[in-house]
Length: 416
Image 1: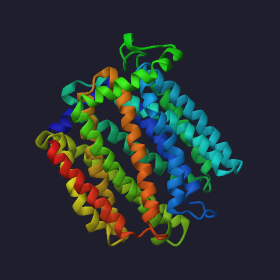
Image 2: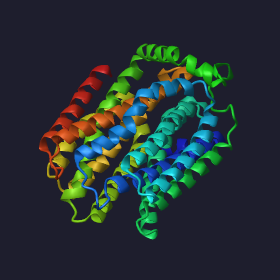
Image 3: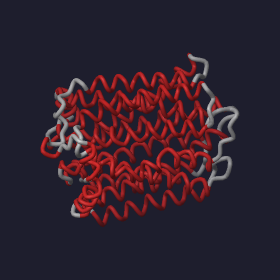
Image 4: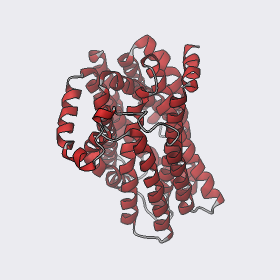
């Protein structure tokens, strides 16, 4: 198969393989950290969790950095990306260790949120930098395949990290602090792995790098305006980002619904609910993996917008068919489908942005991309909080999500 052949070629590229290693270790650590935080805040036996509480936690964790995200992108276009991966992961290792100490000390939740905000803030730089650096280690002909393998492998690594967190909790007597320390160790490994790449390999080009922080901050506002103007001139990239933001909104709303179903409808205890949620995450991860295999073939035959259209239209039909029974088995099938269509659309979107946007602007555009992801997810959680009953069963929510998928498919048909 051409896809398998291209994957073999990519994995023979030393610099791509090293960048992929940094992504895998970073996102595996993210998975460990997020599961530890979720189990402590959402699934603790002493806490009465609601959809509103979940939405509030997401807002606290994501919205502040959604505001500064574009400014982070401007800085990312002026700092050497290898150094961002090195110092960013070192800082996250330190912060994850601090979070473990806070859990041991049983501090109020708001202190944990402050720590989590710090980790999330650094994450804006690392994830945007990983996407912006990819064209520096892969030739344009294989960029679609690289976008299939790299982000999807990162998502699978995050899923595996979540699984590792469950195992550590079992071994360490349900200790979320121990899980946090494992995440800190993985962040440290990611920082060390970045040292295997040259300091200037990942760009941006030397003439664009401003080593002085003051100079970079002074040009932030001008850089943000120029980045938005650049995006406005690249309509394919702008259209792809709009569509992907709406698809992310749908995924976020259904994620909150599944959280509530696992917590209150499908299980009798918090441990059973957490196990079901872990299974749903694993099945969704399988969908992400399937997207990595199918997307290059589908994009080659349907085009990037054609593949996104197919994903959105499929979700519009399958989400109500599988979701309205509110039963575990069909909902797990829906989790697989949503993983496939969401990641398939993201692969196409990443490629559109990377090929439409100049290298000097990629960092800030991908930071904007990241911001749109966060705002869409938090907005979805807020809407879900208004629509979901305590047991998580909401027919109107499923119908609204299906209609949004249909609207995205219609828009993509026009843009195509």
